[in-house]
Length: 433
Ligand SMILES: *Cc1c(COP(=O)(O)O)cnc(C)c1O
Image 1 (cartoon, rainbow, N blue to C red):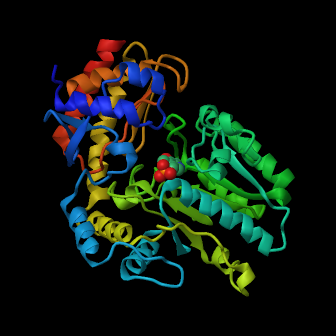
Image 2 (tube, rainbow, N blue to C red):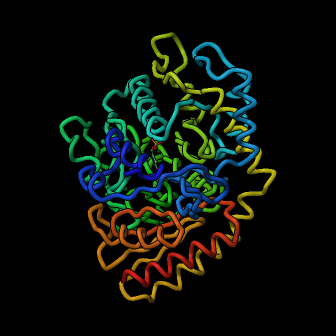
């Protein structure tokens, strides 16, 4: 018996590929994965030629849509010149251009760019910078990090320790550094502020930095909180001489409205991690921005240098694409146009608040989420997956966070596609609930 090309691919996938965040036994037994052949704009096309609206911009990265022609051109033009060099004591124009341009767009007072290759390493570099900074200030005892319950900062061991989602941290508990997880402002802002200020008052002499996802805790369940907490966190960390590290890996590049979520609170952190949207979903690339104060903490003799780097940090292909991404944001007025689309998205989602079985509808910029049932999101809850499966049958690709359903479309998704995505989700919610 001959099977279709799709079936053959799936069978080889199930034989060899170990998928991330995936219970493999159930996957191999039951899954009917999408097999993607190409993508363009807001759409994915499978090997059978069927199109799906990409409701989460492929893991929150393709903020300008798939295969934006200008980004593909920037990539191929750079590839024809050279694809890689190291970045230690040798340099190149794409990295220099990008660094200059991202600083021009960065919160006022950020002045230096340290390159890495994904969101986890951008945050990992920030915590190592913070730790070494204090050692070189002769404040070695300032080595404890604060983060939030429900936080997600990536997968390397350092940032795993910062994570506040049990399922991601628990298996590695024996390996991770001690971190104080503070209450999330998304769950109770007043309590979060009280505990933050008390912790800093009592323990600042031991604390290196506070690490935050600004305004939206993404992987923790698209939990949203107000800029007031961010402002207070900045005031308090300044007052008690603790560094503030802001993880804009998900929220940066206009996801919450302005270019950085930090702008909504008018703050400048000491260190800012950015990845995902910065290379438009074309290839892994990341950066950690620092203020002059942090940078100067590493000047002096060679023993004070930051002995850290990744083989592909500042990779010219990534830098050339990231430079073009900034150009496209400017010339296509991405942020301004997304503001209109965000209104459309909000109007649709807010109307679902009254559906039975739906709670906690929340929207910020081009991000909309809701909870199915009463409880907050848990990773093992099947309801999100049921709605997403129904949506896939209707032609939209979305992934749940447990019982939380959310979308994070491309910022330039055509209005017709955004409307169709919402129509599909509405029908899928009605089918499942
Ligand atoms: C995705 C994400 C990361 C990790 O980025 P990777 O590129 O997957 O390593 C870190 N922080 C936040 C807020 C994220 O959303």
